[in-house]
Length: 445
Image: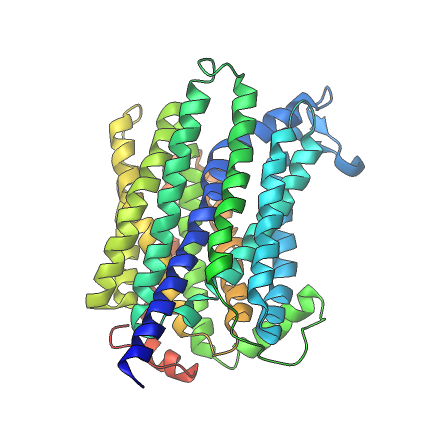
């Protein structure tokens, strides 16, 4: 192969990688501004305005307490995603038309998010439908996006490429969240009501998502079909077929089990930290929002820094180190004094520094364990571990609080997920797992 050909291939690969980063830049704003900050409280207030005298709304005639409507909508979106992801993943691998499916999922989610501008008055049902569509579409699009990683980066580059993608996402989330908070906190100065400010923040997240998705759709390319016909199996049947296929690669399943456990702990910390801060530590909303922003900013540095560590120590060792850091952070959180926002910001800093890196390196490590030609199908299982299976942590958190009446006991109970996840991951022989999957083993793993 000539030097010119090699240079051309490297240029094309780097160009495609840069386009890939921009999908994280596009969609992370939805997770940060919509799901984490604005939609939950706002949709709950809309549902309460539509509730009857007993505090219930009645979607499709089913009595639902208004305060639970947002949580139930998120749960329904997970069920929809679990049914759809294996079907779409198998179709993407068998037809080779991954990019059109990514575009369809991304613009479905972006359109639903933009439509949240019309969520006002007592239109709680509209909000629930848009949330289900947007959240399920984001899961499907993220699965397809993640499945590009083993195709656009050779083994020795994947840790760095995955880390840069996460860093791009956290940077975008931080940037847009700052703008949103300026609008929300100073809505009177801009001549809009607080409700209108929230609706603008929700809609602009959808517009941002749609606009920047054009970049990856322009630069990513399909690799050709892996089979002759797309799957027509229903979602659950396709999911069962994917699991049966994964049983032929037990070491890949062993990694996925470890990831499911420790990621459940990560997702629970993210979702319950604000509850801990407000209920146990007595901190105000502005402090909690500031902490969310701090996590986003530091996660950029954390993702890039852990990506560099992986070059020296390997992805597995770096992930194991991050799980130790998670354990220490939770232990420190148990002893935080109430009414002391400075120490809560210190805790948020610790979370931010390990959050992006542990997620980015888990994604890149899993990409080595996927058999060639099964990328989207296997990443559908990975995405379900990331989004669809994270219920044990909140359950343990809730049960611990119910039994002890202490959020401190509830937060320290989550250490179990990181300890068990560490033990399971440490037992996975990743070099042998990569060989068993039919992939080349990088020098550092």
